[in-house]
Amino acid sequence: MAQDPAQRSPHRGALSNPDGRYAEHRRETVDDGWWQAPEEPLRTTVEVDASRRVISYNASPDIPFDRAVNPYRGCEHGCLYCYARPSHAWLGLSPGLDFETRLFYKPDAATQLARELAAPGYRPAPLALGSNTDPYQPLERRLGLTRAVLEVLHDWRHPAFITTKSALVLRDLERLAAMARENLIAVRVSLATLDAELARRLEPRAASPTRRLATIEALAEAGVPVGVLVSPVIPGLTDVDLERILARAAEAGARMACSQLIRLPHELKDLFQEWLQAHYPDRAAKVLDLIRQCRGGRLNDPRFGHRHSGSGPIAALIAQRFALAARRAGLGTDGGAWHLDSRRFSPPGRPIQRSLFEAPT
Image (cartoon, rainbow, N blue to C red; front, side, top):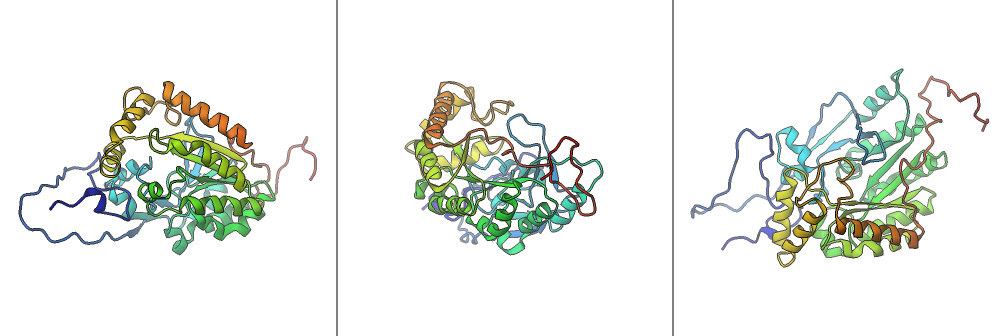
């Protein structure tokens, strides 16, 4: 009897491991009728990322920052919808199961960061920590790279904001609170759904929705500016929770809110369709049709200005619902760079240079 695809990897997000778009050869699984030994349980492997730079820059008008640090490549959370999955193809690996089991880390991330911040021509601006993969994914508990990066940022008074869906961020609560007192840090907790069962299938190794709300509450109580990122909004699947997420996050202490419509670039289109057919076959066609209505008839629209918000009447309705619900909850929606303070930046050995017109503090 053929195995139910949804049961092949119950603790992983992707159901398969398709070849990346840069692969030299293509592999295809064929049932030829011969007996095959049961598949071995998936093991997570960790390798060194030897990148020479740790700060990545972008010029996208769709996101409110121009620089980021990602201590890890790949993410054990296994979120099926993750727009970063196709980046694993650059490593010659699959955006499917490889993305959540073949992980890479930058052992000298903090040292590299210090070196780049100390460059004579560097000009500070809020830095995103974890824009591609979660800086507090399970591997961080053992390696502590995000903690080391935060230490450099704090010591050098460099502003940053964190995006995570992990309660592990509370491990660094004392440092985050100290940075918050100097207006150097803000945290966004990502929350796509309040449905625990849907979250377990969609984000198999991430914190539960309840724990994420508790994380927002703990951060707020410690004085850390915290917001909620309702992402991804999947029409016909997660959008039903949009208003409730914003209301619950505000009750927990969130001050800001933003949202992103689901993006399905490159290999992610096929991975998402496979997952949807396996887990929710009764509504798969409807969900895909609604996404296409938001993406000009396709499953992905890579154009600047449309990637996160979409276009058409369905996308406009979701945007209106978000704006109204955020306003009712008292949540700001102009997160931008969180208005963090870049003027305090001071690498060790370099005095703080203030404007002649700046009042002393």
